[in-house]
Length: 170
Ligand code: FEO
Image 1 (tube, helix red, strand yellow):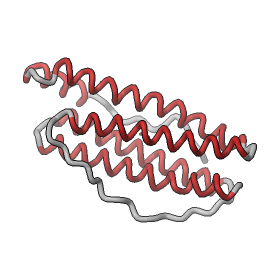
Image 2 (cartoon, rainbow, N blue to C red):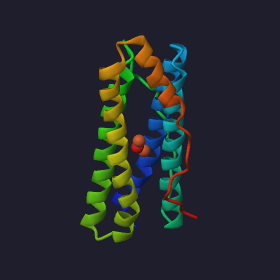
Image 3 (cartoon, helix red, strand yellow):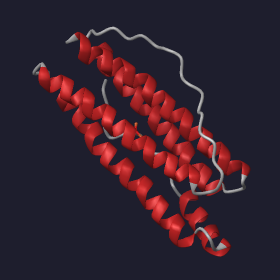
């Protein structure tokens, strides 16, 4: 595998682990506010991000590329209101999309079509992740100011259940 592509894929393990940590921090914020549905949503997000990290890890090993694990940064966002984490999540997903796109571009530059095919799943996933994040902001704008509506929104988010990613690498 091309060295640059392998490095970017390796870095992405860390970025996905950081994403998990950021979402656990957001779950932690909502848990402390008594919003267990919001907390549930972001706990599941954290699990999904760890799944993503493991997919990059497994892809590198399956292709005989080296894996180096580095320190995961401390989540450094501070939230002043219930909307804050939702905006931070959307910005973060947009950032992750830019990272996936950069790996994709590096893979295309060296005709590494196996890697672009692997990344196709993530390209689609990022579209879903950005949409979900944006939808949450819209709902919070519409309903967040009214306690009864917020209660219903929290109940909706509490119903989310974890499902393993549809992409599986043996
Ligand atoms: Fe792994 Fe939410 O992107």
